[in-house]
Image (cartoon, rainbow, N blue to C red; front, side, top):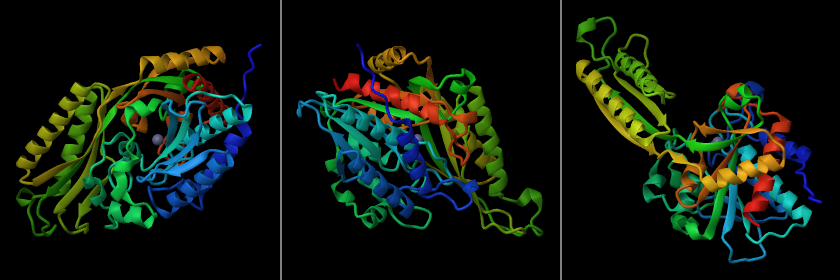
Length: 413
Ligand SMILES: [Zn+2]
């Protein structure tokens, strides 16, 4: 007889709701804000460390702040199976993005421990530092730290208040000087698996709780600064102006056209106009650009066209410009072997599923460069994410965690 151990749905949900209280706005409308290494994030990290200890995992925080809860294998030299996600959020984000992956992983490993099953490979539950990049303008810091992609330049980045990344780390009692000690070789890892909410509507439209990811779009982030002239709004005729705001508006519409043309996505989510007076022509404009596509070559074409349009528009409007690339992550595919494991597990559990590409970036993108990578998607209500209304049903979270549990048993066997 095959005995299937069940993860504890109620316990999983309780931990999700408890973590959701940290950084929550008093009126729920503004969601949860736990920017990386903020006081709220530090409180959440503390919560997680305690939960890992309570789950009888061996807890360790690496020099880049990744929280790692380990379950030993019977062969201590066997490469580890890594499972995780992140608990930092965007500004006014939701309950599930990242948190479900970390808490689901803890629940799955806790169930393994309680079931008394002995596995050959160790399992490391990882909560990666700063996946979102909302505070310092660049994300995947923890996973990049683990895969050896970080450089010293990252620590000089500053947040909106002028605090450097280095200072933020020190305030959190972490010493980034030793960041290279966080690097793990590919041969120390057997696989990386991440459960995450879909953040789109595909599973919902197909009436499925769980999906298996095939490819991940990689984002490119640009920060564009436009310099015009901040003249008097009454005394300066229209054709003598160097209006950074109008230049920005024209570029924004071009970005939309380019994204649609290539069937990719392009977003300007952050913009600022200065000096910001009713009767002053905007002399300076700054905005972000996020461009994504599953095909790297097509994405490069999109980026080149955006650069081209910025140049042409600025020339026409006599505006000076500067473009800084803040993030550049290649699109990637999930490992065939991991997709096969997930398909098998869903079949075994009698869970209907489908394969689908992933639009958002995740730590899995970074981890795929050094090890076999697979991803489980959980249905998102109305596809809403990075928003207070982000929601996934209790049963769906549990179904995904059961798939995760069963996959870990196979991977760490
Ligand atoms: Zn996430």
